[in-house]
Length: 466
Ligand SMILES: Nc1nc2c(ncn2[C@@H]2O[C@H](COP(=O)(O)OP(=O)(O)OP(=O)(O)O)[C@@H](O)[C@H]2O)c(=O)[nH]1
Ligand SMILES: [Mg+2]
Image (tube, rainbow, N blue to C red; front, side, top):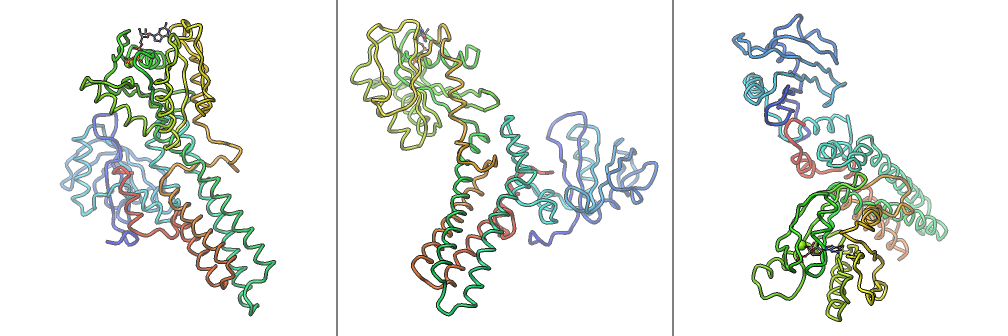
C-alpha cells in the first residue's frame, strides 16, 4: 500500500527487548480504541474515555481469559503522537508477556507496525515535519549531552524554520521574476538583474554557513575520532591510559609493544571522543608488526584529529621528519587536524629542537605522561578543535544529517546555475526553472517535496514501535 494511503490500525511493542519493570504496547489507527476496549476489562469502557487519560484494568483475550493487569492510556485524534486515535498499554515487563499482549491484539485484524511507522504517521498527519521526525531518531541515538542538545533543537523546529525562511525568500524571488517577465518584452532589466544576483548570492552564503556546521554535527553524532600515532616507544599507550584514567593498554620500554588497534570512548566537556591507540610506525620485518602498521594507516585515513607523539628525550632525525611530513600529507588530504605532542617533557634532551611551523602545521605542545604536565591543556585543545567556527554561523543550528547536507549542496548547485543563466543573459524562464529546482531540494528537507522512496528509507531506519 502506498505510504500516503495507510489508514489501517497498527500495533507494536515500544519498549526494548528484554526484561524490565514495564513493557508498553502501542496501537494507533481508527480502530485502536474500540479494539483495545474489547480486550480490556476495567471500571469503565474505553469508548467513553477522554483523551490523555489512564485506566487501570485487566487485559483479556478474545475468550475473556485474563492475561495481565495493565494501565491503558488513551489519546484521541488529533491530539496524539501520530495524530490518530492511539492507545498505549503498559503491562508488566518481560518479552513473553509483551509478545502475548501484542499477538492478542494482532489476532483482531490489526497490522504489525513497520519500523518508524508511528512517526511516519505523525509526519503524514502534519504533527511534525520531516526534520523533526528525523530528530526523534537522532534523539534516541544521542550518546552525549551535546548531541542530545542539538537533536532537541532540531525537534523543536529550529532547522525547519531556517529552511522555511530560505524557501520563502526564494519563492518571493520567483514571483518577482515572473512579474518582471509578464511586463517586460526584453526580459530582465539590468538593475533588476543585479538585485536578483544579490538575492541569490545571499541565499548561497546562508546555505554555505549552514553546510559549514555539518562536520561538527557529525562529530556530535558519532564522536570525534582521535588517532594516536608516532614512532614506537613515543608514549602513545601511556597517553591513552592517562586520558582514560585506567591501565587499558600495555606500556613498556620495549619498542613495538602495541601491535593492534585499541579504541576506547572518552568524554571531554560532554564531547564524545573516540580515542584510538595504534602500533608505532616504522619499517618492519616482523609480519605481525607489519599488519599493525597497515592498520595504523587505515585509522589515520579516517581520523578527525591525528596526534603525533614525539619522544623529546631523543633528537629528531632526518628520517623522523620525513615521517612527520607524510602524516601531514595524510591529514591535508582528509582535512583532518594534526597535533604534535612533544612527550616526555620531564626528560627532554637539552639539544631537542622542534618547530612545527617549519613543517607547515599549527599545533605543538609539550606534555609528560609521567608528571601529567600539559595533559589538561591538551584535552582543552581537543575540545576547541571540535568546535565549529562560530563566527560564520548566523545562529546555533547544527546540521547533523547527511540527507540534509546533500539536499543543501544540491540547492546551492541549482542556485549557482540560476545565477549563471541570469548573467549569461538567458531568458527569465530558464532562471525560474533553476530556482524551482532549488526550491524542490529545500522542500525535500522538510518533507514537502520528498519522494515516497526517500521517506520509506528514512523511516525504515527507525526502531519498531517508534
Ligand atoms: N619519562 C617519561 N617516560 C615516559 C613518558 N611517556 C611514556 N614513557 C615511557 O616510555 C615507554 C614507552 O611508552 P609506551 O606508552 O608503551 O609507548 P608507545 O608509543 O605506546 O610504544 P609502542 O606501543 O611500542 O609503539 C614506557 O617505558 C613509558 O613508561 C613520559 O612522559 N616521561
Ligand atoms: Mg603502545
